[in-house]
Image (cartoon, rainbow, N blue to C red; front, side, top):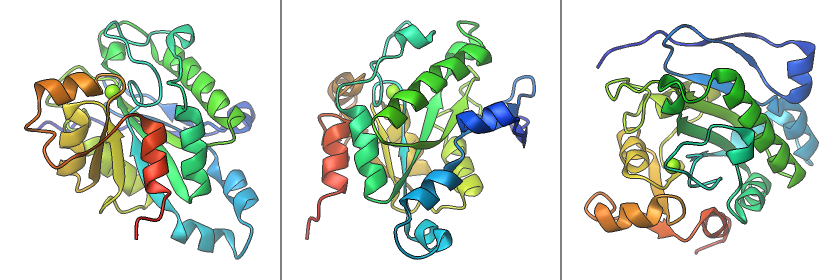
Length: 238
Ligand SMILES: [Mg+2]
């Protein structure tokens, strides 16, 4: 597989810091960029006992696909903040996961950029809306990783595992057994290849995925939506 140049985090401006976003320097054709929320403040706020570091070490990672998992999907791509609308219960599900000690990170293919349907600035506006609505629901998305490339050979484009491996590297978090929630076969394959734990939701393209690709969905836990995933993961099953 080809190796494309990586994006690099080059720093934060005061305004961006206030918005909880890292500025990401985008190289032409770069496969992955990230909006990383400034988690430090919130983590310390939620740390009711012990040190922030202790809290961090006990936190778990969950990776979410975006379209069809958090927001209603569209075959015509989500191209503007107006088109980004949360699936009922998904924002509260993120809050529920946060409260149970999960660091919530998004891994999303956004080839609409590579196809010229939206630009990076618009994607950032969409993500500002998402961050705002999640925060209004009391939750926090720690980081958003996306791959703007159309090329299926790009190692960062799901179903390839590069994006998930990059999350593990940057967040210094193991993917072993970490839930990765998606609505497509791409998500399942990426999760398996990265040694994460694939979970499928019926929202978005999920029902279609189950119908059309039952083989890939074998042995994958299936949930009605992200809310039921959160309920399952935060309930003691012993
Ligand atoms: Mg999806």
